[in-house]
Image (cartoon, rainbow, N blue to C red; front, top):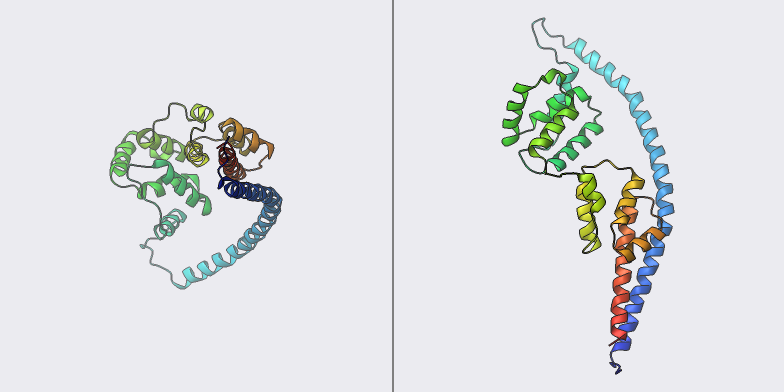
Length: 256
């Protein structure tokens, strides 16, 4: 076998890159402990902040009452309810609009806003429907003629929206279980994330499902590191993919 005189420097470069990736992977694992500690401290700080906000709420209410007493309206005037205040508050936010496409993304953003402002379930349909347009608002007008909106829950409304505008999945959970990596980790992760938005999995089950669909060599390598979150599993899989690619290039050059 003939040796290319330029192969040794290239091999050394590949081995150096391989060593660097291994070092990066080790640092990632060490960082997991630090991240978990910081997450615990952050939760404690958020708890303190929420407590401070709760103590401030009565003061704000007292100021509102003083202001209302100082500016009494006539008996025939309109007095806004808590429901109206909620709608007014949302009209000032950059609430996402929905017409007819990418329902999952819109619902995700809406749920984030509802959670952030602790919107009661009975107000969600009214608030969301105000921000429909195009085909979606036409569908809504038709829909409310055929159902009793007084008893309509947000969950039922979302199911109806999904039936009309959602993507067709025969069984998203089954599709997720059968999803396997055929290209890069990045491509596999994108397909995995898409299905994750429409299924309800615990953190442990999501990690297990993601690792199970990886290529055999990546599956074993990632499982060995026992990632605690889905984000850690993604990161380790990508780093291991780089390790294997560096090894393959190094071995390929040595066999020339």
